[in-house]
Image 1 (cartoon, rainbow, N blue to C red):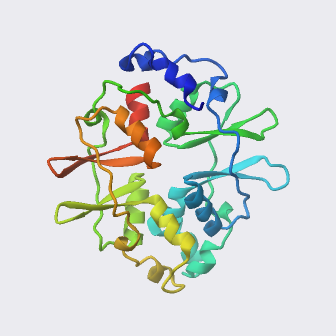
Image 2 (tube, rainbow, N blue to C red):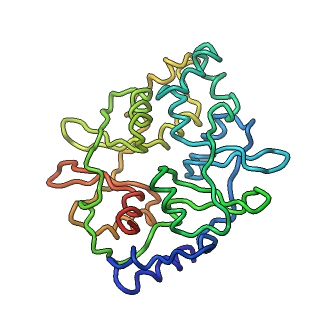
Image 3 (cartoon, one colour):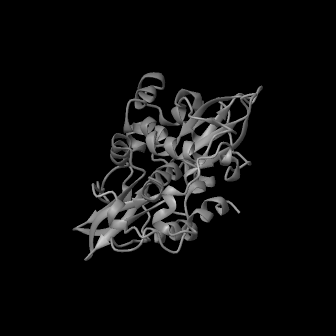
Length: 294
């Protein structure tokens, strides 16, 4: 059972969990996922986006096709950066003369980053530290030959309990940046990249009408239903076309344990927090981990 070792720590009470996470060498292997989805440096950006969308992964290890050694990490937010959100957009402008179709079929090595990784001797605390300090949602585990033997994600760290004794309002992100249904995909990509956000609530006349996530943008990219080949035309598509209209919300006074339950039942990684019909925050897997472990 993936969470068995972590759940044992709740036996003495939810608030005590953070003082009962034993920093034991090698205990990361108790929660590691051994079937690891990887890509190679020559995998196209479009194909990488398809893999992320299909498998619900924001990070995919990039390995050498011959040696299987870890060479980099493909990250969803970097694809948004490439799509106009940040500095990687210059690749489209300078190397592909604004041609979007050519650009999305370029190799992912163009935008992959150096990966954070650990070895089999790592503890769960080592993983938590990297997840929270480096804002990474997946960490490959390597053996002595530098080959990937597993991967640990945020969801593998997610603690489960009936109650943590921590209210959502204590840990939620109170700084909320929203989108409007008329914004272009390029607009929301810029906001996500600049602020490190994976999702934006969509507001119309102070009413929460949807949520747009990094996966919604990746889905648009992988579906390939574009208006044309010029990057500015493609990215002018409106948010209302790709946003999620069915919204699951929480309230500040709910116990943080409800988020763990929602993550497991819905597959979602974050939820708007609403009080008196007003959006007051966002709570994600990261807030659960930070609130319970730290």
